Image 1 (cartoon, one colour):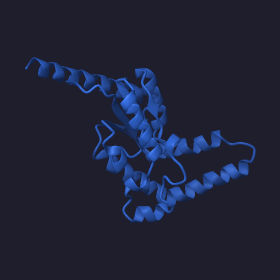
Image 2 (cartoon, one colour):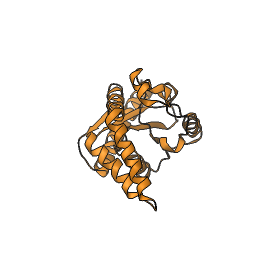
Image 3 (cartoon, one colour):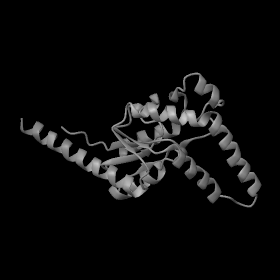
Image 4 (cartoon, one colour):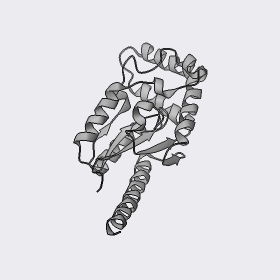
Length: 201
């Protein structure tokens, strides 16, 4: 008997690694649903003092997204697609998500590239009061130098120890999507071959 539930594919990586774009492209390519991490966060998601959290061991299970967990559980139980693609920065490392994820793909992009994408994202969204927007960028960069960079490095290193595919280097989002698509198709073919062998035993 086969398990007809869709496979949950978590796309992980630091902020600016291209997770959202990759998830959307993959969902379109496979005609499957997707969920985005940032769509399910609120003021209670992150510890109030991230620097203290980092110094206390950076336990990612303290980053809580109950709405995300509920949405994924509901989608897994009702959807008949082959895959569900999710943006989950922390791979299998959060206790609330670990049992819901089948495969983890880590986008291991250079940190300077990720930072430039974050800054561009902010500048592309500049509105009327540019001084406030620029102040927000400056505030982020202060935190990046003080502790965000170390958080990103630790989180990515932790995910890398328990993931199924790592995509490294400065490659385009389209090439990233193609690499993941080909890996999933090959993996699915291998699983189908194993199932057929099992049926004939």
